Image 1 (cartoon, rainbow, N blue to C red):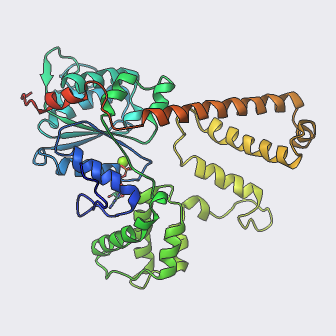
Image 2: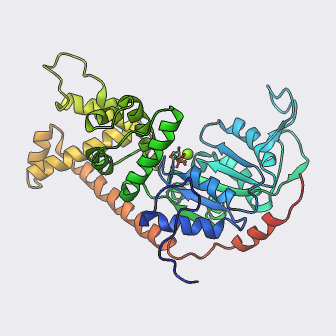
Length: 387
Ligand SMILES: Nc1ncnc2c1ncn2[C@@H]1O[C@H](COP(=O)(O)OP(=O)(O)O)[C@@H](O)[C@H]1O
Ligand SMILES: [Mg+2]
Protein backbone atom coordinates (compact mmCIF):
# COMPACT_ATOMS: atom_id res chain seq x y z
CA UNK A 1 0.00 0.00 0.00
CA UNK A 2 1.42 3.44 -0.88
CA UNK A 3 2.40 5.54 2.10
CA UNK A 4 0.10 8.53 2.46
CA UNK A 5 1.90 11.58 3.77
CA UNK A 6 -0.96 13.68 5.03
CA UNK A 7 -4.46 12.53 5.76
CA UNK A 8 -7.32 15.00 6.14
CA UNK A 9 -10.02 14.42 8.76
CA UNK A 10 -12.58 11.92 7.48
CA UNK A 11 -15.59 14.21 7.99
CA UNK A 12 -16.11 17.98 7.82
CA UNK A 13 -17.17 18.24 11.46
CA UNK A 14 -13.95 16.62 12.64
CA UNK A 15 -11.33 19.29 13.11
CA UNK A 16 -7.56 18.99 13.25
CA UNK A 17 -4.72 17.88 11.03
CA UNK A 18 -1.98 17.44 13.66
CA UNK A 19 0.39 14.62 12.83
CA UNK A 20 -0.66 12.78 16.01
CA UNK A 21 -4.13 12.36 14.44
CA UNK A 22 -2.97 11.08 11.05
CA UNK A 23 -2.95 7.43 12.12
CA UNK A 24 -6.43 7.83 13.55
CA UNK A 25 -7.83 9.18 10.28
CA UNK A 26 -5.99 6.57 8.23
CA UNK A 27 -7.38 3.73 10.37
CA UNK A 28 -10.91 5.17 10.27
CA UNK A 29 -10.80 5.28 6.47
CA UNK A 30 -9.46 1.73 6.24
CA UNK A 31 -11.73 0.17 8.84
CA UNK A 32 -15.00 2.00 8.18
CA UNK A 33 -16.13 0.21 4.97
CA UNK A 34 -15.61 -3.27 6.45
CA UNK A 35 -17.75 -4.36 9.35
CA UNK A 36 -14.78 -5.07 11.58
CA UNK A 37 -14.89 -4.37 15.29
CA UNK A 38 -13.12 -1.14 16.20
CA UNK A 39 -11.72 -0.37 19.66
CA UNK A 40 -11.27 3.32 20.48
CA UNK A 41 -8.78 4.03 23.24
CA UNK A 42 -8.29 7.46 24.74
CA UNK A 43 -8.68 9.75 27.72
CA UNK A 44 -12.05 11.30 28.35
CA UNK A 45 -12.91 14.09 25.89
CA UNK A 46 -10.43 13.07 23.19
CA UNK A 47 -13.17 12.47 20.60
CA UNK A 48 -13.92 8.75 20.84
CA UNK A 49 -17.61 9.26 20.21
CA UNK A 50 -16.98 11.63 17.29
CA UNK A 51 -14.71 9.02 15.71
CA UNK A 52 -17.20 6.20 16.38
CA UNK A 53 -19.86 8.19 14.52
CA UNK A 54 -17.43 8.86 11.67
CA UNK A 55 -16.76 5.13 11.32
CA UNK A 56 -20.50 4.54 11.12
CA UNK A 57 -21.15 7.36 8.65
CA UNK A 58 -18.38 6.18 6.35
CA UNK A 59 -19.57 2.57 6.42
CA UNK A 60 -22.10 0.75 4.25
CA UNK A 61 -24.35 0.84 7.31
CA UNK A 62 -24.59 4.63 7.30
CA UNK A 63 -28.32 4.57 6.59
CA UNK A 64 -28.86 2.12 9.46
CA UNK A 65 -29.07 3.02 13.15
CA UNK A 66 -26.15 4.20 15.31
CA UNK A 67 -26.90 3.17 18.89
CA UNK A 68 -24.73 4.29 21.81
CA UNK A 69 -24.74 2.52 25.16
CA UNK A 70 -22.77 3.95 28.06
CA UNK A 71 -21.69 0.77 29.83
CA UNK A 72 -20.29 2.80 32.72
CA UNK A 73 -23.56 4.51 33.57
CA UNK A 74 -25.77 1.54 34.40
CA UNK A 75 -25.76 -1.12 37.08
CA UNK A 76 -24.95 -4.63 35.83
CA UNK A 77 -28.56 -5.90 35.80
CA UNK A 78 -29.96 -2.81 34.16
CA UNK A 79 -27.19 -2.85 31.60
CA UNK A 80 -27.95 -6.45 30.69
CA UNK A 81 -31.59 -5.72 29.98
CA UNK A 82 -30.66 -2.47 28.25
CA UNK A 83 -28.32 -4.34 25.89
CA UNK A 84 -30.31 -7.51 25.30
CA UNK A 85 -33.87 -6.58 26.25
CA UNK A 86 -36.19 -8.47 28.56
CA UNK A 87 -39.62 -10.00 28.57
CA UNK A 88 -42.48 -9.00 30.79
CA UNK A 89 -42.12 -10.54 34.25
CA UNK A 90 -38.43 -11.41 33.82
CA UNK A 91 -37.68 -9.58 37.06
CA UNK A 92 -39.42 -7.26 39.50
CA UNK A 93 -40.24 -4.10 37.61
CA UNK A 94 -40.22 -5.73 34.16
CA UNK A 95 -43.82 -4.75 33.51
CA UNK A 96 -43.63 -5.09 29.76
CA UNK A 97 -41.41 -6.49 27.03
CA UNK A 98 -38.43 -4.37 26.21
CA UNK A 99 -36.31 -4.42 23.05
CA UNK A 100 -32.59 -4.33 23.74
CA UNK A 101 -30.05 -2.00 22.15
CA UNK A 102 -28.43 -4.81 20.15
CA UNK A 103 -31.76 -5.41 18.44
CA UNK A 104 -32.29 -1.68 17.97
CA UNK A 105 -28.91 -1.49 16.23
CA UNK A 106 -29.77 -4.24 13.73
CA UNK A 107 -28.44 -3.28 10.30
CA UNK A 108 -26.31 -0.54 11.85
CA UNK A 109 -23.69 0.05 14.50
CA UNK A 110 -23.69 -0.32 18.28
CA UNK A 111 -21.22 1.88 20.18
CA UNK A 112 -20.31 0.33 23.54
CA UNK A 113 -18.87 3.29 25.41
CA UNK A 114 -16.76 2.80 28.57
CA UNK A 115 -16.55 -0.93 27.93
CA UNK A 116 -13.81 -1.06 30.58
CA UNK A 117 -16.43 -0.72 33.32
CA UNK A 118 -18.46 -3.84 32.47
CA UNK A 119 -18.77 -6.59 35.09
CA UNK A 120 -17.38 -10.12 34.58
CA UNK A 121 -20.92 -11.47 34.08
CA UNK A 122 -21.65 -8.95 31.32
CA UNK A 123 -18.27 -9.60 29.75
CA UNK A 124 -19.26 -13.25 29.18
CA UNK A 125 -22.49 -12.16 27.50
CA UNK A 126 -20.70 -9.61 25.34
CA UNK A 127 -18.15 -12.18 24.26
CA UNK A 128 -20.92 -14.37 22.93
CA UNK A 129 -22.58 -11.56 20.94
CA UNK A 130 -19.24 -10.58 19.51
CA UNK A 131 -18.46 -14.15 18.50
CA UNK A 132 -21.87 -15.35 17.36
CA UNK A 133 -23.93 -12.20 16.91
CA UNK A 134 -26.64 -13.91 18.95
CA UNK A 135 -28.11 -13.62 22.43
CA UNK A 136 -31.30 -14.14 24.43
CA UNK A 137 -33.50 -11.49 26.02
CA UNK A 138 -33.48 -11.58 29.82
CA UNK A 139 -36.12 -14.10 30.94
CA UNK A 140 -36.50 -15.77 27.55
CA UNK A 141 -34.77 -18.77 25.96
CA UNK A 142 -35.38 -17.90 22.30
CA UNK A 143 -32.13 -16.95 20.58
CA UNK A 144 -32.05 -13.72 18.62
CA UNK A 145 -29.60 -13.09 15.80
CA UNK A 146 -28.57 -9.61 14.73
CA UNK A 147 -26.39 -8.00 12.11
CA UNK A 148 -24.58 -5.34 14.06
CA UNK A 149 -21.18 -3.71 13.79
CA UNK A 150 -19.54 -3.23 17.17
CA UNK A 151 -17.43 -0.22 18.09
CA UNK A 152 -16.20 -0.10 21.68
CA UNK A 153 -14.46 2.65 23.61
CA UNK A 154 -12.29 2.60 26.70
CA UNK A 155 -10.64 5.34 28.74
CA UNK A 156 -8.51 2.85 30.69
CA UNK A 157 -5.86 0.45 29.48
CA UNK A 158 -7.62 -2.86 28.81
CA UNK A 159 -4.23 -4.57 28.83
CA UNK A 160 -3.74 -3.54 32.45
CA UNK A 161 -7.27 -4.58 33.37
CA UNK A 162 -6.64 -7.98 31.77
CA UNK A 163 -3.44 -8.30 33.74
CA UNK A 164 -5.26 -7.43 36.98
CA UNK A 165 -7.93 -10.03 36.19
CA UNK A 166 -10.65 -7.41 35.81
CA UNK A 167 -11.23 -7.83 32.09
CA UNK A 168 -11.55 -11.11 30.17
CA UNK A 169 -8.64 -11.73 27.88
CA UNK A 170 -10.78 -13.46 25.23
CA UNK A 171 -13.16 -10.48 25.11
CA UNK A 172 -10.18 -8.14 24.89
CA UNK A 173 -8.92 -9.97 21.78
CA UNK A 174 -12.38 -9.92 20.24
CA UNK A 175 -12.60 -6.15 20.73
CA UNK A 176 -9.03 -5.32 19.83
CA UNK A 177 -9.33 -6.14 16.11
CA UNK A 178 -8.65 -2.58 14.95
CA UNK A 179 -7.41 -0.55 17.93
CA UNK A 180 -7.49 3.20 17.34
CA UNK A 181 -5.65 5.30 19.91
CA UNK A 182 -6.81 8.90 20.30
CA UNK A 183 -3.97 11.10 21.52
CA UNK A 184 -4.69 13.58 24.32
CA UNK A 185 -5.06 17.19 23.18
CA UNK A 186 -1.77 18.20 24.85
CA UNK A 187 -0.01 15.91 22.36
CA UNK A 188 -1.55 17.70 19.36
CA UNK A 189 -1.28 21.34 20.29
CA UNK A 190 -1.37 22.38 16.61
CA UNK A 191 -5.06 21.44 16.62
CA UNK A 192 -5.96 23.72 19.54
CA UNK A 193 -6.32 26.94 17.52
CA UNK A 194 -8.43 25.44 14.70
CA UNK A 195 -10.60 23.61 17.25
CA UNK A 196 -11.04 26.84 19.23
CA UNK A 197 -12.13 28.69 16.04
CA UNK A 198 -14.52 25.88 15.22
CA UNK A 199 -16.17 25.97 18.66
CA UNK A 200 -16.21 29.76 18.58
CA UNK A 201 -18.28 29.69 15.38
CA UNK A 202 -20.49 26.90 16.68
CA UNK A 203 -21.35 28.64 19.95
CA UNK A 204 -21.64 32.11 18.41
CA UNK A 205 -24.26 30.63 16.06
CA UNK A 206 -25.99 28.89 18.91
CA UNK A 207 -26.09 32.00 21.09
CA UNK A 208 -26.98 34.10 18.04
CA UNK A 209 -24.11 36.54 18.45
CA UNK A 210 -21.38 37.63 16.02
CA UNK A 211 -18.24 35.48 16.08
CA UNK A 212 -15.88 37.32 18.46
CA UNK A 213 -12.17 37.77 17.78
CA UNK A 214 -9.74 35.58 19.67
CA UNK A 215 -6.81 37.86 20.52
CA UNK A 216 -3.29 36.35 19.97
CA UNK A 217 -2.43 36.21 23.71
CA UNK A 218 -5.60 34.17 24.25
CA UNK A 219 -4.63 31.76 21.48
CA UNK A 220 -1.18 31.43 23.07
CA UNK A 221 -2.68 30.74 26.47
CA UNK A 222 -5.04 28.14 25.03
CA UNK A 223 -2.12 26.47 23.29
CA UNK A 224 -0.05 26.19 26.46
CA UNK A 225 -2.78 24.87 28.77
CA UNK A 226 -2.58 21.09 29.34
CA UNK A 227 -6.31 20.35 28.88
CA UNK A 228 -6.80 17.38 31.20
CA UNK A 229 -10.40 17.25 29.94
CA UNK A 230 -9.13 17.35 26.35
CA UNK A 231 -11.35 18.59 23.49
CA UNK A 232 -14.43 18.60 25.70
CA UNK A 233 -12.75 20.98 28.15
CA UNK A 234 -11.65 23.23 25.27
CA UNK A 235 -15.18 23.24 23.89
CA UNK A 236 -16.68 24.18 27.27
CA UNK A 237 -14.07 26.89 27.72
CA UNK A 238 -14.92 28.48 24.37
CA UNK A 239 -18.63 28.43 25.09
CA UNK A 240 -17.99 30.11 28.44
CA UNK A 241 -15.69 32.69 26.83
CA UNK A 242 -18.36 33.66 24.28
CA UNK A 243 -20.82 34.28 27.06
CA UNK A 244 -18.29 36.23 29.15
CA UNK A 245 -17.11 38.33 26.18
CA UNK A 246 -20.69 39.53 25.77
CA UNK A 247 -20.24 40.57 22.13
CA UNK A 248 -16.74 42.04 22.53
CA UNK A 249 -13.37 40.46 21.70
CA UNK A 250 -12.05 37.60 23.78
CA UNK A 251 -9.16 38.95 25.83
CA UNK A 252 -6.82 37.21 28.31
CA UNK A 253 -8.55 38.73 31.35
CA UNK A 254 -11.62 36.62 30.49
CA UNK A 255 -9.58 33.47 30.39
CA UNK A 256 -9.54 32.95 34.12
CA UNK A 257 -13.22 32.08 33.78
CA UNK A 258 -12.11 29.07 31.81
CA UNK A 259 -10.19 27.60 34.71
CA UNK A 260 -11.64 24.67 36.58
CA UNK A 261 -13.93 25.63 39.40
CA UNK A 262 -11.73 24.16 42.14
CA UNK A 263 -9.12 26.80 41.39
CA UNK A 264 -11.68 29.60 41.54
CA UNK A 265 -13.34 28.83 44.84
CA UNK A 266 -12.40 31.42 47.47
CA UNK A 267 -10.44 29.88 50.33
CA UNK A 268 -12.34 29.48 53.56
CA UNK A 269 -10.91 29.89 57.05
CA UNK A 270 -8.89 32.80 58.37
CA UNK A 271 -5.33 31.79 57.59
CA UNK A 272 -4.29 35.36 56.81
CA UNK A 273 -5.43 36.17 53.30
CA UNK A 274 -5.53 32.61 51.88
CA UNK A 275 -4.16 33.87 48.56
CA UNK A 276 -3.93 30.43 47.02
CA UNK A 277 -0.30 29.38 47.38
CA UNK A 278 -0.21 28.32 51.02
CA UNK A 279 0.11 24.60 51.63
CA UNK A 280 -3.38 24.18 53.06
CA UNK A 281 -4.94 25.68 49.92
CA UNK A 282 -2.68 23.63 47.69
CA UNK A 283 -3.74 20.45 49.48
CA UNK A 284 -7.39 21.39 49.13
CA UNK A 285 -6.92 22.09 45.43
CA UNK A 286 -4.98 18.87 44.95
CA UNK A 287 -7.83 16.89 46.50
CA UNK A 288 -10.47 18.69 44.43
CA UNK A 289 -8.52 18.10 41.24
CA UNK A 290 -7.88 14.50 42.26
CA UNK A 291 -11.50 13.60 42.87
CA UNK A 292 -12.42 14.99 39.44
CA UNK A 293 -9.96 12.60 37.81
CA UNK A 294 -10.76 8.94 37.16
CA UNK A 295 -8.79 6.63 39.47
CA UNK A 296 -6.08 5.02 37.31
CA UNK A 297 -6.60 1.31 36.62
CA UNK A 298 -4.93 -0.93 39.15
CA UNK A 299 -5.64 1.41 42.09
CA UNK A 300 -8.53 0.68 44.45
CA UNK A 301 -9.77 4.21 45.02
CA UNK A 302 -8.93 7.82 45.81
CA UNK A 303 -7.01 6.98 48.96
CA UNK A 304 -4.25 4.97 47.26
CA UNK A 305 -4.34 7.33 44.27
CA UNK A 306 -4.02 10.61 46.18
CA UNK A 307 -2.72 9.86 49.67
CA UNK A 308 -0.19 7.19 48.68
CA UNK A 309 0.77 9.29 45.66
CA UNK A 310 1.42 12.33 47.85
CA UNK A 311 3.26 10.25 50.44
CA UNK A 312 5.66 8.92 47.83
CA UNK A 313 6.41 12.45 46.56
CA UNK A 314 7.06 13.59 50.12
CA UNK A 315 9.30 10.68 51.03
CA UNK A 316 11.34 10.96 47.86
CA UNK A 317 11.75 14.72 48.30
CA UNK A 318 13.00 14.38 51.87
CA UNK A 319 15.29 11.50 50.88
CA UNK A 320 16.80 13.81 48.25
CA UNK A 321 17.23 16.58 50.86
CA UNK A 322 19.26 14.21 53.04
CA UNK A 323 21.27 12.69 50.22
CA UNK A 324 19.61 9.30 50.60
CA UNK A 325 20.38 8.88 54.33
CA UNK A 326 17.38 6.97 55.66
CA UNK A 327 18.01 7.69 59.37
CA UNK A 328 17.97 11.45 58.91
CA UNK A 329 15.10 11.37 56.41
CA UNK A 330 12.99 9.25 58.80
CA UNK A 331 13.67 11.71 61.61
CA UNK A 332 12.68 14.75 59.53
CA UNK A 333 9.60 12.97 58.21
CA UNK A 334 8.65 11.98 61.75
CA UNK A 335 8.21 8.32 60.87
CA UNK A 336 9.84 5.12 62.03
CA UNK A 337 13.04 4.05 60.21
CA UNK A 338 11.68 0.57 59.47
CA UNK A 339 8.51 2.07 58.04
CA UNK A 340 10.56 4.27 55.76
CA UNK A 341 12.71 1.33 54.67
CA UNK A 342 9.62 -0.77 53.86
CA UNK A 343 8.05 2.05 51.86
CA UNK A 344 11.19 2.54 49.79
CA UNK A 345 11.29 -1.21 49.08
CA UNK A 346 7.67 -1.06 48.02
CA UNK A 347 8.32 1.82 45.60
CA UNK A 348 11.17 -0.12 43.99
CA UNK A 349 8.90 -3.17 43.58
CA UNK A 350 6.10 -1.00 42.10
CA UNK A 351 8.53 0.56 39.63
CA UNK A 352 9.84 -2.82 38.55
CA UNK A 353 6.28 -4.04 38.00
CA UNK A 354 5.34 -0.94 35.99
CA UNK A 355 8.48 -1.28 33.85
CA UNK A 356 7.59 -4.92 33.15
CA UNK A 357 4.08 -3.88 32.13
CA UNK A 358 5.43 -1.22 29.78
CA UNK A 359 7.80 -3.68 28.14
CA UNK A 360 4.91 -6.14 27.76
CA UNK A 361 2.67 -3.46 26.21
CA UNK A 362 5.48 -2.57 23.79
CA UNK A 363 5.66 -6.18 22.63
CA UNK A 364 1.92 -6.70 22.27
CA UNK A 365 1.12 -3.49 20.35
CA UNK A 366 3.90 -4.12 17.88
CA UNK A 367 2.63 -4.59 14.34
CA UNK A 368 -0.86 -4.61 12.87
CA UNK A 369 -1.54 -8.34 12.73
CA UNK A 370 -5.08 -9.28 13.58
CA UNK A 371 -5.69 -11.80 16.35
CA UNK A 372 -6.96 -15.25 15.38
CA UNK A 373 -10.60 -15.16 14.30
CA UNK A 374 -10.54 -11.53 13.24
CA UNK A 375 -11.00 -12.36 9.58
CA UNK A 376 -14.01 -14.64 10.00
CA UNK A 377 -15.59 -12.07 12.31
CA UNK A 378 -15.83 -9.74 9.30
CA UNK A 379 -17.65 -12.46 7.41
CA UNK A 380 -20.17 -13.34 10.12
CA UNK A 381 -21.10 -9.73 10.71
CA UNK A 382 -21.81 -9.22 7.01
CA UNK A 383 -24.30 -12.10 6.96
CA UNK A 384 -27.67 -10.44 7.40
CA UNK A 385 -30.18 -12.40 9.40
CA UNK A 386 -33.19 -10.53 10.68
CA UNK A 387 -33.91 -10.80 14.39
N1 LIG B 1 -11.59 16.41 16.37
C1 LIG B 1 -12.68 17.00 16.80
N2 LIG B 1 -13.30 17.96 16.06
C2 LIG B 1 -14.40 18.58 16.52
N3 LIG B 1 -14.98 18.33 17.70
C3 LIG B 1 -14.43 17.40 18.49
C4 LIG B 1 -13.26 16.69 18.08
N4 LIG B 1 -12.93 15.82 19.06
C5 LIG B 1 -13.83 15.99 20.04
N5 LIG B 1 -14.75 16.94 19.70
C6 LIG B 1 -15.86 17.41 20.54
O1 LIG B 1 -15.43 17.33 21.89
C7 LIG B 1 -16.43 16.81 22.73
C8 LIG B 1 -15.92 15.53 23.37
O2 LIG B 1 -15.76 14.54 22.38
P1 LIG B 1 -16.26 13.03 22.60
O3 LIG B 1 -16.22 12.33 21.29
O4 LIG B 1 -17.55 13.00 23.35
O5 LIG B 1 -15.06 12.52 23.53
P2 LIG B 1 -14.93 11.16 24.35
O6 LIG B 1 -16.03 10.23 23.85
O7 LIG B 1 -13.57 10.64 24.04
O8 LIG B 1 -15.10 11.51 25.79
C9 LIG B 1 -17.65 16.57 21.85
O9 LIG B 1 -18.54 17.65 21.99
C10 LIG B 1 -17.09 16.51 20.47
O10 LIG B 1 -18.01 16.98 19.54
MG1 LIG C 1 -17.43 9.78 25.58
